Length: 243
Image 1: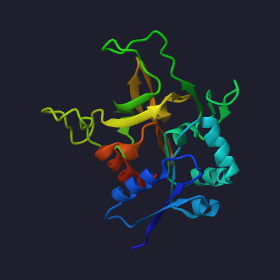
Image 2: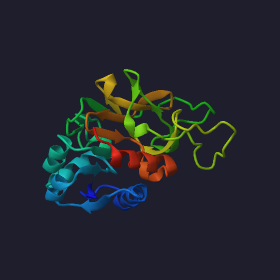
Image 3: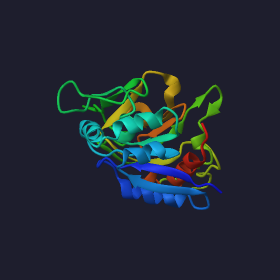
């Protein structure tokens, strides 16, 4: 059986080891080879590509360009299944307000939209506490339905309680609901097209796109590699996905 190659793009700005370990765990029983690579040709040759991202958007875009990997990522995004994670999702959009100047940072412009900063001045959470930035911890994701169809990467992602919350009766659904995932971010995606929003999350009274998708692209603001069983299932779905 032919092995499917997966390239995790190493441009110096991602949680690469954790992502690689999670993908390998999710790939058990599948004919998949996983490589963390900083080589543009390896990204071009891979059947599937994962673009992690961690830190400031301006630094991530600068590092991607300096590494010589930007063109390889753009070429992969034109035809191969590509999964963006955290800042790797934000980079797929046209522009981010985060940057070293007031002008912000241009993105890869693979999807129309922008990245904005959480602004919760004066807002309070339901328990009366201040809304903190960054959002750090577990939160729910509501998978979106377009034309009566949910994205296939949500298949089998169960609505399990967040770790530490216990398992109340009826708290688990076989497929559906609003599963918990782990977030760490101060900026959020605002898509220009509603049909590009694959999942939504509410924080501080704001509902934002926590997963985006179009064609062969899928990306998450949350960290699947830190999201226990739900994250592993999403990775496994990505490895089997044929857009």
